[in-house]
Image 1 (cartoon, helix red, strand yellow):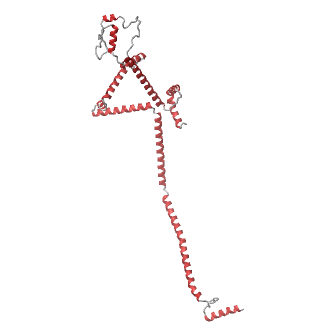
Image 2: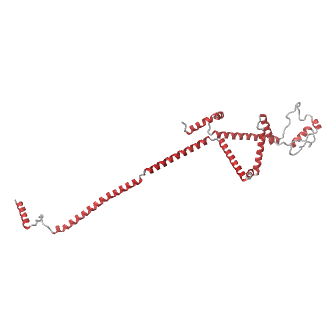
Image 3: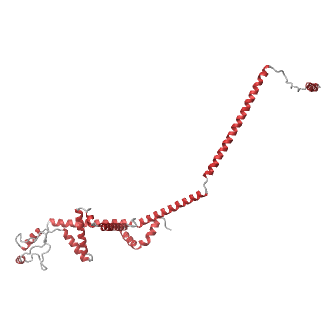
Length: 329
């Protein structure tokens, strides 16, 4: 048993010498192996350094994550409002909501009033506004001691003043026919027509002289501003006999006016026709503006709708407007 002997000899040598025996390395130790020993130690030291660096790099992300979590926590603490701030914000939102509701209702009422206001109502309101301004100017002038009418006349020209005086004159004439019937209206139309038709007194006197058999120049106007004529002598009238005709004479419509008189009559008739058409056009435009939307299919239906609206608009206008806006129940 050679191996056992070797172990026993080894123990004996350790006991004799008092030192532990070095382990025997198999093989021989050469110079190359001795030179390689320090290199192994350097590599091991570099490995330790790399291990330390890797541990440090592993610790750095953990520290960064910890700091980020701390920052997020602080930010959430700062962003989270308090109870007072939330209450103030809710009150502000309620105030805005109430204000928007009031504004919307105010706008709705204004639009509703605009739809109900017709052209005639606008004219009436404008007239009331002018009257209020005139009253305010009058009160101010009385306080300062100024003449209101004179102050107003400074803004008018001579032509405008003449037109105003003519308008006042026509208004005075209209007062005479405040209560009139068909006969009074006919008389008024005749007087208005004869005012525009100027009579040629010279030609009329010539025709009258020829009819009465008087010498030329016998009849003449009394004054340039008067239409009255000088009465002929009774003998001349008697000599003329029935020159003008009577109830028993058979001569009728034998007098032919000249071309100028015919042109004047035609011109006056055309002016009346144009004036009547202009008034009818204004009346139609006024009716269309008051009606707004077209609700008729012909003129007869238009008249019928006017009669219906005259009696029932005050009851049905609001319902119709609600249907048009889509707010009806």
